[in-house]
Image (cartoon, rainbow, N blue to C red; front, side, top):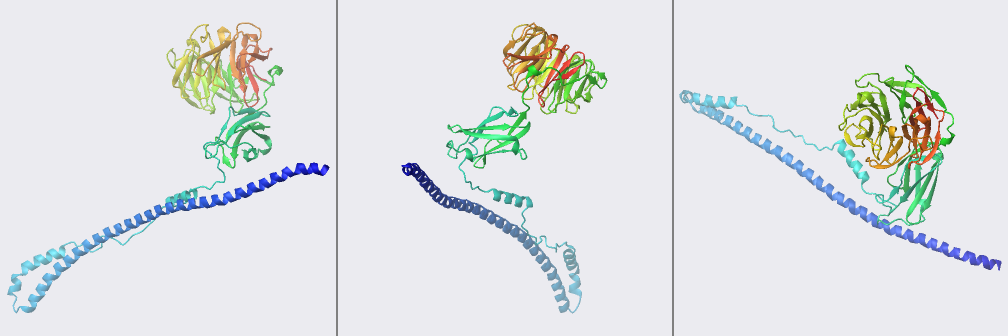
Length: 544
């Protein structure tokens, strides 16, 4: 009974194995047929190339024959001319010699003297071209560039592939390339063959995921078959940093590989922000005076707009002064109460020059690049510009406080559009103070005197508002600085309530911290460390 049971269980396996052997043999036969087919295709392709090469060879030979024919024709004309000259000289000489030998007196010869001398002088003094007008030089050459180009082209003629995967029609689908460490980076791979059909299921092992050399032990990969022709790929990175992720299927690279993935530190719990890690207030000229606007760059450095000192001061993430920028004045590179400050992806620094009613742009090293704006209420004019932000396309958004509006400019300062007006209604402003753009391009604005936050789409269309005057969670008393964290949460300086409040992207209250702050004004979220930097009116900067 035991053996009968085992036999019953094993017999189907034998059938499966036999079918597998048969499939392998069939594939092997198909390979032989395909080999003969593609070799015939290769022969035909190169026969066509040889025909073109032979045509070019014939063309070059014809050209060489034409060149020789032209040279020979010119030489023949020269030869004919020289022969004519030779005969023209020889004939009168022969006549003179014959006359001298036959005449017994000189009377006839003397009578012909003038005629012969004239003829001989003409022929003798004529400039005959005795050097050949053509040389025998003839050469064929091919430039080294042509030769290397031909070699390169020949080496790239045709490809023999062992896969029917279509590189053009296969692709990766993903939403974001920013994740936190130990968080899954998810994307899908959709693979088509050269007949535009989705490759069947059960082929996970044909994928190859390649991440930067030297980082092999810093991530884990799982590939799941979604059955519908899509494959879900999960990569969990264990260290922060930038990664280049290459995806191949049967050694065919799937576009848009490589994916550039930025891995950030794990998000922090804002409710645990009890005491700052670092506090500093020193500057080049002593203490910071009024650091109302701050931001951080991709190096983790802190850029502070010190309005009363009329300069920008740059610190590292430990609070050590690195450099200063500007002095009081109205020349390029000078400031009269600098306010809002922002940095773009290239590291360029953008500063609202409040009392000079303009925006100044500097490179990462602090070298002046350009400026735009002047006092007024027209397009591209300002009345006390305060907050500033850079959107995902590099465009510049400026809070034009005195004109109660936001103006949008191209990266070079060319005016694009504006939105807003004075008032308390939706999309209106009272004391517009700070501005930020989230990962979706949505615009978040601190409506300072209205004690609220307003949100707009990337074109400036009103979406919603939240907040009102008060001390409860979600209420404000003079909201100032704004920043956005990696999860698009909104961090708001609730100045006169002496605290920082955090809301999700829909304006729902999440948490608060810093209840012992003394009139905070500016805030910056440091992407490199998940730290939050807060500045106070009296010149103190705190890093949480």
